Image 1 (cartoon, rainbow, N blue to C red):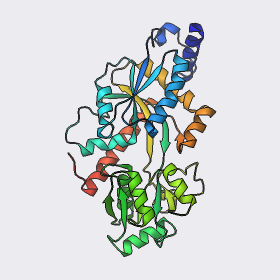
Image 2: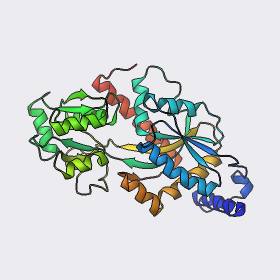
Image 3: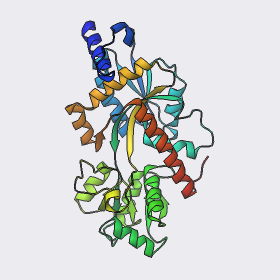
Image 4: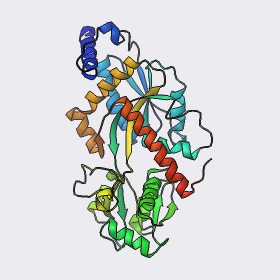
Length: 327
């Protein structure tokens, strides 16, 4: 069993080093010798938790050590992120990080960590999208008509938000910025409440997750105009992106990935990246993610680092533009 595990590990390293097989001792023969902890900043049952458990279960099988998920909830994920930032950089504590956390530096005056500098990105695992949903009474059949309506009646249309820095807030901010329109924010305790308000007609529109919106779309209780990601969603292949429909370059989606504390040995990052890429691209995991409205997507540590920095900058710009209050 041990020999089999070691041979698999060497194989994955060979894959990411262009076919050069590295001797077992060179890939960290002693790693892992104990369980790995995957910390999640959101509760059990959340999308982040689902991704962490799905990938963690498969990592356990490949590594011969348990990859245990630990939920440390609160403060929009920053409690968990701060905990991992302070953990030893030995590869035994990982963070399942989400796009939501890239907004926190712009919202909080003091942060115990720097998301772009205090972590070693490993790989993206999945992306998700939101839908631009309107109440059926809104006289717009597509995004262009909605923008025209907003321009003709500045400040009359409104949208349901779950607070500053939330995905609906940033999606609406990007829409307003790129289209040059003003849409009024109405805040609710969460995304669910914002969607309920859209269904009732209390607000004109909202930006729910694709899975949350599907039953409402199917029963005609909301009208979906577009998805907010750069690519069309597998669950709604006939619905255009906002970019396709009206605003080229529009992309406000969510994502889930894995990072470790900065300073973790490079060979551990490379090995874990290869395994996560392999796991996420299996048919079984692709189907599991798809049923949750998530698109399997992996990348290199360098590409993931660039994505994190890009989203931190974009979120900061959008939050400044909306005048959202910081701590």
